[in-house]
Image (cartoon, rainbow, N blue to C red; front, side, top):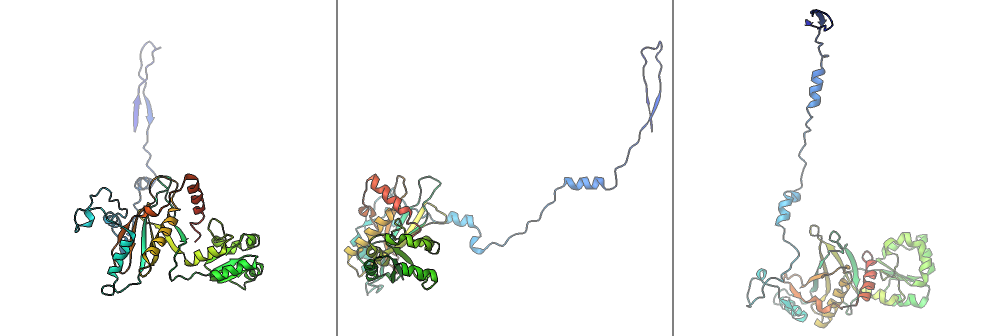
Amino acid sequence: MFSIVSKLRPNSSFFSLTKTFISERNYAARKGTRERKQKKKTKKEVEVKAKFIPHNQRNKDALLAARPILKVDDSARPLPFDDVYIMKYYRWKVYPFHEAVESHRQTHHPDMYNEPNSNLLARIELNMQGEKVTRFVEDFSRIAAIPHKFEHGDERAIIAFSKTASVRQEALDAGAQLAGGVDLIKQIQNGGVSLQNFQYIIAHPDILPELVPLRGVMKRRFPNPKMGTLAVDLTGVTERLLHGISYSAKKDEHEKDFGLVEAVVGTLDMDSRCLEENFAALVQDVYRMKPKREGTFISRCLLVSPPSSEKFKVDHELYIEVKDDNTQKDVEDDGEGERVAL
């Protein structure tokens, strides 16, 4: 194919037309080039296979939306004006402790449930909100000392360490399964005694340097004053661990600011005053774990006694001791070490 290009020469007297013949060619693309470019432009669609979803996780969002809210605040509801009313529309009635216990005794009478010595459980609801909005109180487990003993049914083996023979004997008399000094430490190192057979390890401060080689074996159970397992009075520590109320506070899986404590404070055949004093000791011990923030930590306390489903609300604020700021700070510092201890 040829094209004609004309050029004008302004210097010449006459314009002349020159014809220049230039050859043009259309080069064809290499075979397969256009196809490769087209494939690059189109993205490869990946086929996503449907995964198996367990039955308890299907429609999870819908189930969570229909899930009842665990936190209960009925302060805005009116007080009941009659003896018979629908409870969900009115404020919960607050019973005196002895009246709530007597109500459970009536339902557990031989004429009804026939469980006169059933356990009395305290259901304590907590506000697990921490110092910051995005922080929450970690789950903790403790043993609260109580003034009145009862059969809790738990197996609690205790081993005590002390250099003084009289202190070791006092721990044994209080209920410790095994007590010893440096010789006992050597037996543990040689494998003659296993610490796995003991749930709690307590010690007197005089033998603490000799216990350091066993720190790797004891791990979190290593005696510590903040945990209450390193003390001069091994008798009091032993009695608290053996006869105290063991409880755990756990956050809800979905409502992180809601925590729950369920613990047995005694049996219905005990005196009401003894049950109330055990309940007061439990409430005070739980309140020690309150974070350093304003507002309530214990939101509600209910008394429950299986197999009955009745729940009676009691005023827990009557049993909380108000302390000054310095004392409360010391208690909270001590409580931080007990969260993972007992």
